[in-house]
Structure formats: structure tokens, C-alpha cells
Image (tube, rainbow, N blue to C red; front, side, top):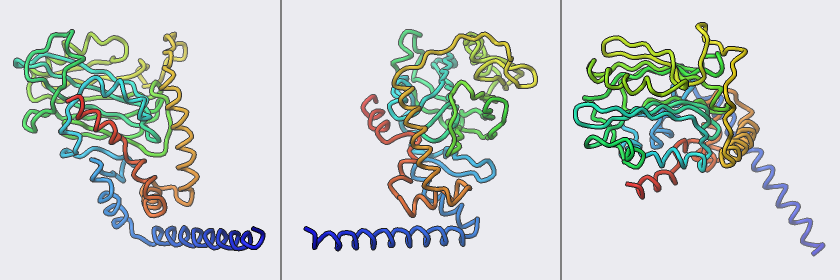
Length: 309
């Protein structure tokens, strides 16, 4: 045993040197890559997850043809979100139009080590009574009936990003940040294909209490804020007396895990400060960790969606 012990130490020392050399080699490789090449490579890697990276906004956003489009929406997806480290505020707005029940849903909050927001539009095959809407699977909308979405996400009073596109599921996720959902404000503007559709949506929107406020509409367009009520300058009233939302144990545990994973991510990628550099480094150094970071909508959720459908 005493004879083998020095050889074990020697082997461990060689492994440590090889890992150190490999890490330094990856860092040099990424630092020497031109920016266009980095962006092209990163988008090539993230496209199978349904996303692309926007350098100008420093966010990941969803593709029009993302694989998630196939699976529609059911309320059970939101109810299971915290099991996959997604701690979110979500607000579905159902409305009836042209013989169908439609739904536009808003999301904002913590997605693993990302903070972000989403807006999506879905519809049923027929009119759905209110008591059954939470159990129905809604389908995504064809391209020729999609509205134009514009969303701006604020952390407290600081704008993080703005994205605008005709879409069925417009998203923005900023990696490597942490925030409680209630500290995020989502400013939304929707341009519908017709003023009649907008009117049907507004009728349902006005009954959603204080979480949706600042509603303005004209013709085919409506704008509003989703989150805590704000003053005219966008700041939170200092003397507001809002009830404190009690957190579910699972959500609190998920946020604790998210903070741990975020510290690990920052520690591992500390040679870099740019998101593109950090993720390319993670892909080269720890490919399994890279894949985990990009599962904003986890593959286990996908299997659950298939089961629901």
C-alpha cells in the first residue's frame, strides 16, 4: 500500500496538470476568436434548444420555428415549473373570438440561472367554458393570425432589454443573473390582426386586478404593464402597502438552488465577462454543464407535455 501511494499521487498530479493545460488552452482559443465567429458558433450550438443569442441585447430569445411550438400550452406546465427551477409570475388572459377561446399568457421571473420574460398566444379548437379552461390543451396559432408583440423587461426601475417581433412566443432570457419575480416589471405592447380581436382581448384584460395596469388601447393596439404598480416615472411607490406573497416551499428551495448554481457558473466562467465567451468556454470545458444551462425549458418538461397531450 505504501509503495502504491506515491504512484497515486503522481497520477493525480499529472491529471491536474493536464486539466490546467487544457483550461488555459481553451481560454486562449476563445480569446483569439473574432466576434462574428463567436456569435456564429454560439448560435449554432443553441439553435437545437429553440433559441438564438442577440449580442445587442445580451439575451437569448426564441425562434419562430422552435421545437416548443409543437406542444401548445396547458396550465399544468406552469404548475410544474418550480420542479425545474423556474420560479415565475404568470398571468393567462383568456378571451373568446370568432368561435374559439384564445389565450395570451405572460411570464416573468427566474429560469434557473437566467432572469427573463415571455409572452405567448394560443387558441383552442372551439369555445371553452371558464370552468374547463385550466384543463384544456391550447394550440399555437398559425403564422397568418399572429399578433405583433413588443416586450420590455425592467428589474426594479432599470430596463434590461426590449424585443419586438410578430411571433407566437416572444421571449428574452439574460443569463447569469438572479432576481425575485416580484422585482421584475414587464411592459407589453400588442398589435392584433384586427381591432375586433383587440377589443375581445381588452374586455378580458380589464378584469385581471392590480397585476396588470396602465392599460392603453387604440384601434388594433393595446399596451399595459405586468407587475407591481408603478408611478408615472416608472418607480415603485415608496409607501405602497401591498400584501406580501407567501412563497411555496418548493419555489423557495428552487431559488436557493438557483443561487448555488449561479455562484458555480460565475466561478467556473470567471476568466470571461461576456455571455458569449462564458458559454463557449463552458461548452469546451464542461459540455454537460453547457447543455444544462440552455435547458430553459427542460427536456423533462417536454416528456410531461407529451404525456398531457
